[in-house]
Amino acid sequence: MIEYRIDRRSGVSTYQQIVQQTKQALRLGLLEPGDKLPTAREVVELTAINPNTVLKAYRELEREGLVEPRPGLGTFVRRSLARPEAAADGPLRGELVGWVDRARAAGLEREDIAALMASVLEQRTG
Image (cartoon, rainbow, N blue to C red; front, side, top):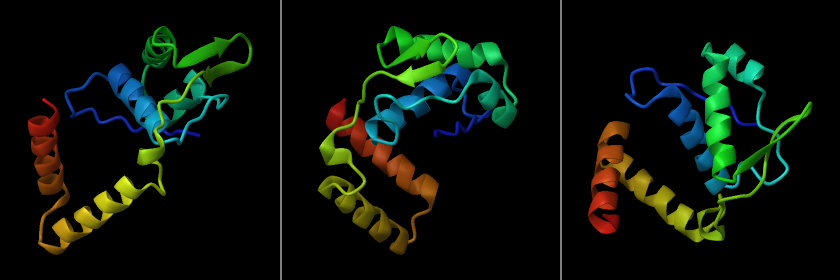
């Protein structure tokens, strides 16, 4: 089950962080069709956010066709965003792990690596 981590200093709205983290889990195959998302109550207990914020995020995911509410049962994943190339055992992920290891060995900190990756990603994908 996914555990949301809310960064109140990120500048990204809380509901959008839930949407983004859910989509990331769908892309990485951590959530698959049929999986149940945590209830609003469970998210509130772990993150101390307003339950309406969770419901707003789930409605956004539903609007995008990614999840579906089942009355009395919860909210379930409807479709995946995963691609085999991005799987945990995929070759591209393996190459990326190796690159990050080399960056760390070269002395770059997490924030340096994230900034470098974001810069290259922006240049190459617009």
